[in-house]
Image (cartoon, rainbow, N blue to C red):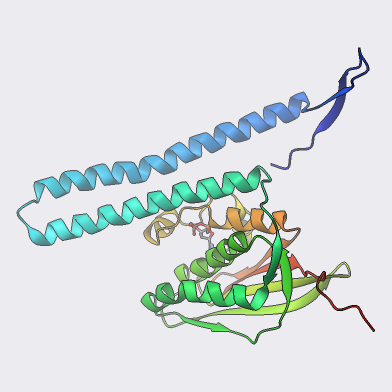
Length: 267
Ligand code: ADP
């Protein structure tokens, strides 16, 4: 995905020099294969909800006289349609991120960002009987795309809720830490859920990778959430880390460089 370009000076036959950034052969082939895999994955992922909606619509037609069945199948059509809508909008977000298309970065208050993410997750948490907890504000600022950062945080929080049993706690904490001497804002989302086996810990950040297909589908997942988080982190010059133990829970930590441009340097 991180395309390394080879610069080649192609035309030097007049005063105007044209510099063309091209890919070498192996890179071309690798990209082509990645693209083919991606298209195959997307087609497969879209086929599933489309197929389900078709079957549900048939069932609806056949049970037209039975109000209970109509309600049941109707609700499932709505559910599948929503999931497909999410899939399409997440695909769009991901492809924009992969094209390196980063809209204007502005200063973003970390505490406000966390508050907004928590508000957005309140209903989902209540429905799943999960208690959301967060620590005290730290007054830090990062530079970035507010909406993308919010999406990343939301993905982490909704996953934490989706992969935890009822009556457990999901907590969000924030710190300023130094990585290679550089101040970074670390936002950690911790759950007491099912956890992720070591062998899968890298893979969960891949597009469409799921530990358990059935469970992810049941929770309305698209398999793109963590791929988006990874790209948002990279586009902001940051990182995403995962600590997890099956049966104990998981902690995802998003680290983004602190914005020091507004710092008062006067003595
Ligand atoms: P999905 O839409 O399936 O949740 P994600 O990309 O967000 O897609 O996550 C990929 C997979 O990683 C999930 O299907 C799940 O198996 C696993 N996963 C993500 N977050 C957690 C978590 N907090 N606890 C346990 N497993 C998780």
